[in-house]
Length: 194
Image (cartoon, rainbow, N blue to C red; front, top):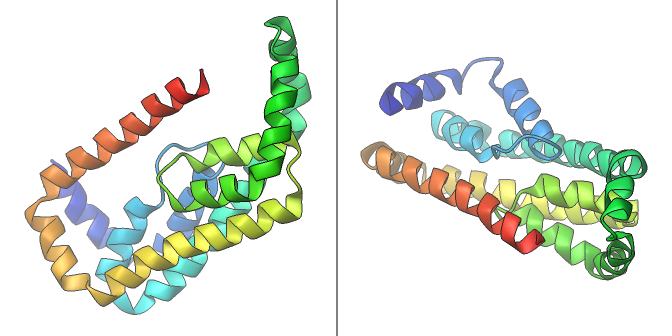
């Protein structure tokens, strides 16, 4: 089944709709969706290496725009949703301390989350919740997301066929490792947040 899914993804990676699908996934991943756009970047670049840079640009733009959507969720829904819950549990003052620390280190937090597998949507929403300067947020997002997606696309463009052969040979192991890391990230996030 995994092999069929891989083959179908590779076949779809060269269709006219592939770029728009990537843009949608990159947008929603930055605000609400748990699956990173890398799962589309990889087959798209491997299937059409000449489009690697265009793929990276599209993914970066869509991801940053999605980051602004996450920022808006944190900014506009904090008062209605999160603040009453924090007040009810007596954590509102602790949040104010967290907010001050977050804003002090916000650019680095956004940059770090933008280039790592850490769920970026958590940082985009937190940035809005804490009122991180929107220009700092924008610059850190563009730099980090661009670095990440251009690095992935560049490596695949440069070493495409050997990487493709490795993926196809070890598809089961790589898929298992991906899901273990994804679930591990959410578990780590749960324990770090408490």
